[in-house]
Image (cartoon, rainbow, N blue to C red; front, side, top):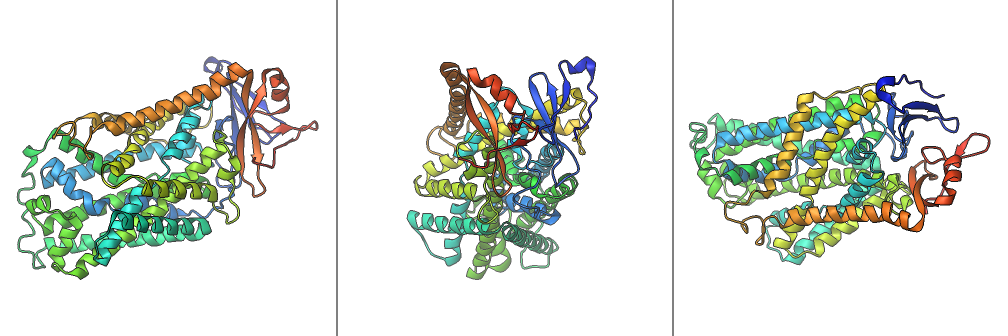
Length: 582
């Protein structure tokens, strides 16, 4: 049965509701855009979405294994990588003083919380669609048709590698062994650990999620232990002579901070928190996702924030500001040496903890990235829909996992160490920030559209001030990378012009736009056809769109034989879909 809607005649324009007898979905028209209303098995809330988007999988072929705790630790594992062990010294150098460093960590929480509120509302609008940004871009910007799905799909396919995480793991493994290494030995260990990660996530969804929980618990326990040890130090119960040295004059050095240093410190802070939306990528695998995420996501962010601040207290209580700034070691290493002495056992203990943290981050990122790749494949804008969508033989998205593994191995092996590797890693940061900005702005458009169509409001609503704050934050993150380093144009992370990665990133997006224009607009006009979507249903319950070329003379018959989603209608009024993805 179709759902009933009462459109606002004054604002609705061409709005009309059409009960579609060929399927369970209701079709809501807004001009030439058609919207469907579908209720997934994971939620009693209806998902209203543009029919051109990937079809809702009413029963998730990946199951419903993501609980409150798993969603919590999916976020924690991506947020807590190796950054909290290494970035505090960089942030201190950028802002100049311990006091301002602590304020920056709190500001980072406020910025992250504002964006998290936006994601919570977007997820409440589409509770039966995994893939987070894939879905939100697709639904916020239905015109030009297939534009944002195509651009984001190309971006995510090109940047689906996680080589930096694997390299960091390898570096600390050699540190754990206490041995030096060549560039190729480092690459070899990185390839090995990423291959182990592939096996872990591909073999079984439930067990890979349990592993996420295990490593998440280890990370939280590690940060709690460092925090407790720091409080013991601060209380004067250790051999450290003056634990209050940084707190008696916490603002010392603030005046020495440069604009570039303060900006770079804020970037480091924001990326240290990155990952608080990781669980939104698996939302169709969560029962009652809106209720689950509205508690687990903010709690994960708040817990990590408190621990980040306490860990910084520990670092700054164990060593003076000057010792941290002048040391070539990471802040965590200084803390361990001050507390336990310059022993191999202390150094190895730290390396073990950092390795476990890095591996947990690898697994969590692979899980989220695979769902994003799978969702782009379900949109139909990528070739070989079955490769991206199918979850056989293990009930996991094996195609996306194998693709991530392949491109990561290439990016580990191909770029030489040094500038080239740093450059490749930086390439993904700017497009990611740009799409975050566009997603946040998209929430405003989705709200307006839902009001115009008289659709129910989302079960979660972000404060307007949070949306504005988040937009400003991401706008800031788009502008500040262009600010030149203090050392000059060649004083960034690479020996050549600091903005090269920015220009190349934008160039890749422009090339994606050109590809879209040629594929969706130019070629169809030239060869006399239009793109239409059809629905593919696989034997395991996976569903995706496939874009096909329909000659202009056959468009009327095609549109008559297919519903808005792309199902082929039978003469008796029922519908069916293709069972083959190739």
